[in-house]
Amino acid sequence: PVLLLDKQEWEEEIQNVSPIIQKRYALYYPVINQPELEKYAIQKAREKGLKLINPRLVPSYAKMKGYTAISSKPVGPIEFVKLIKESECIFTNSFHATVFSSIFNKELYVIKLKGKNKNRNNRIIEYLKMVGIRQSLIDTSDLIHIKDFESTMQWENVTERKKESVEYLKKSLDYNS
Image 1 (cartoon, one colour):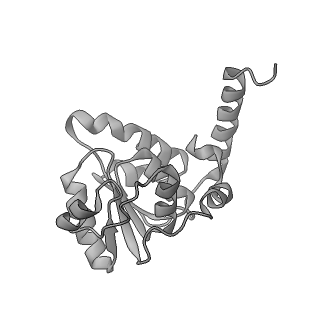
Image 2 (spheres, one colour):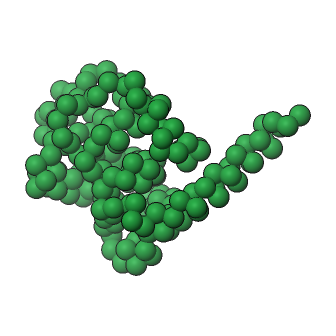
């Protein structure tokens, strides 16, 4: 569903959402807690001179852990998209954060999950292959770093998948009857 809207449509959806943070920042968004990724995000954000935010933390706990606190108001799906759009770079193990990073051409860092959660890497890896990221970049290391999606994106693959998804939804919802 994330890919059913294109970049312009997502931008229209978030245009009325107020900026959540006024400073230049990096976004740390783990679906599964990953201390290795968190440590890397803290280090890289510091090197880049960026504030680091984690929208999953309440403000008082965020400050205690060394993050820049954001509003105490919950971050919902549309605010999440706005945070990605306005960030300088993303540190994640989330499929959705990966896809939105590609839509908005954001620098992306993913450290592959290990152990019982390693199968969660599959959706991210398959998506990155579909959009044309070199397989050698994906397979050779535990760290996937994509600095520029636009130079490699194969949007025709995304467009084809979008058509398939729309047709599936129409059939599933019996849209034509």
